[in-house]
Length: 87
Image (tube, rainbow, N blue to C red; front, side, top):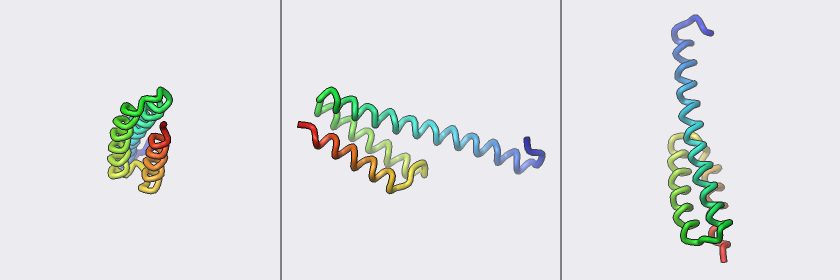
């Protein structure tokens, strides 16, 4: 454990940020999983609504700095492609 006050604060702040980022990443994974679950169930309407929700969550995570913009763009693009491929 650090002895200097500023170092102690850094440890606490970084832990709080790590926990927030972890929660955001978890919500993104859950949203993406819901899209793929709807695709597997062959439910186009549910897939479209889940895609809209997932896109929103991914964009918010990107704005907060959890994900790089290219990563988010690629993720959204692949989700769109998967939903559009449904017959």
